[in-house]
Image (cartoon, rainbow, N blue to C red):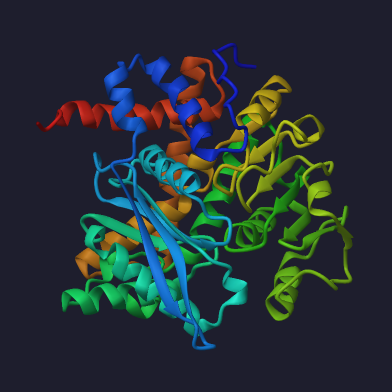
Length: 425
């Protein structure tokens, strides 16, 4: 158990930007950063809010709100996804952009952090409406985009089709095609093999590395996965292939549980056909909140922020938590879990497989030369295992949790580059 200074509880436990800033401050203290450098690294470089007027299918005009936050350019172009959700807000986008800065730094790829979001409910929108929202949003933010400036990617409720629309809109405006303007694209438009599975594969790799540290063999491991999308679903499938028993998985409507283990390919096939887990007959259906408190060895929260909080952290039974989602654990929950001796592999390391292969895609697009899936997966394996070892070593050196170790490593790298470059005046 760490004896390092604890992060002070934020004024609002559920404000993701405050949580990021508090953890940043602990890392900055450990690094001895002066207040001026802290202020620079804590503050987003640029924030853009745009109105998105769209003609709906019924002929009526509706205005949506979109955001793009560029947190830091010190190590390279900003990089980060675009999410569509009814609860998107600016503080969330700010936090996600900052997490992208630290995430890129943890895995040592030459990007800064960015993030975007549009306030809408994609489940209530047609494909045509989503396309019009995407194209108008792209037009609104395109002055700050570019393959050497800011490179978006898919996130919650967006996908490779969204990125194809974004790339086409940007390319039509500038009168040239630049496939490196986005990542997470279809293969036919310059996407990378292995990209869809990358975040889930990264989760699997760091889970395997953390289990080695805990002395737990994969075949003796029971896993609960919150979520069933590209991160949760693919992560569960890859963890099962490693010999682990997946006892529970969930979607936005609820969770399923089978103490003997789920047949993950069968579950995912059912989900693909029926769009929800409701009605699946080979497992017990349980509430989403109860899923997090199941008896297991590994818990993978791979859904949204603020799932592990001061209200449920005492009842978490997992020995290891691997954060497939961004910001699933609040600061107060972190303190409780650390006191209880639960190992947490933080989001800025655990789900960095996605941005790592996004970097590989960007490199391939700029070179015009594409790699095999075996090469992509091999290079991802190398990056994730090396990064886990670096975070673990940093945490051990500073006697901190893995999360604070990851922040110290990430913030230190960005601060070092910033100090070498100096301040332009």
